[in-house]
Image (cartoon, rainbow, N blue to C red; front, side):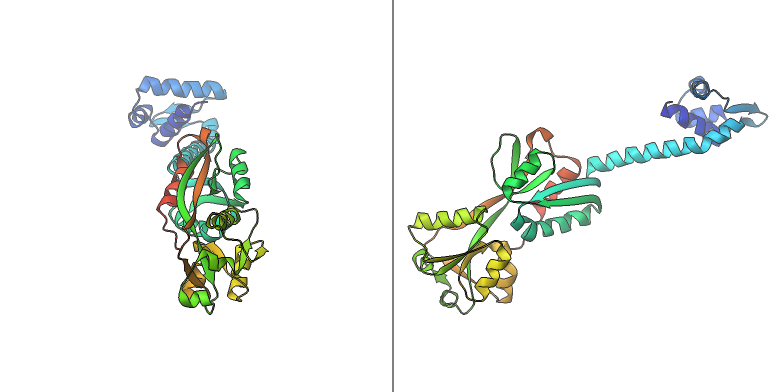
Length: 297
């Protein structure tokens, strides 16, 4: 049963005329008549009888009509759903994000994306960057957000460069003078977070490059706990700039410049399977929103 057969049936029923329906459908009258006969053969019943004032539905035609209307409507809605999917206006988007990204970066991105694409259903899974990579490779996520992990089957698209900044309690001597050296920092109690994260690795690498040994270190499992310890003057910390922007603005923490240390940065990227091809639909729309959203820091 072809769609053109059903559309032809509905148009003849609406206009009570094969010739007028053929004009509306931009086909010849013999073509439309052949379509109607093909539909009747498939159904095994006559759908029209010729009357004085045109074509009239038979009992079988009247019984079939609501189902034909429903079928055409469903197919048109399906076609519209595909069009919306291709343009990114509707569909499902599965994301995976590293903890710091999902907490401090992703909310602003999703706020803009959801506002522009309210009919897209978004699901977010979290895990360390290695977990995010695995989710992308196993098709559990269409896009992964985390640090740049190289893999031959994955394409990386950088979208943000995160900087670690030194923060202290406002009344700390470093806070009053506004700057410190790496050697001075080495004599402080350093508060670290999440031993499995890349932030932990690059912080240690920065002290190693400067030839500085740490006097003491407190290891916590998340950034929020680290911030609370610094606020209580229990130590100092190198934390992602996005993670401390509110505390700095509110005066709960003070930022200190490292006068002799190189900026500590890492690239945050979007990961996609290489065999997924060029991004389109909801994925393309999300990546565009990702690159255009201004991330406050």
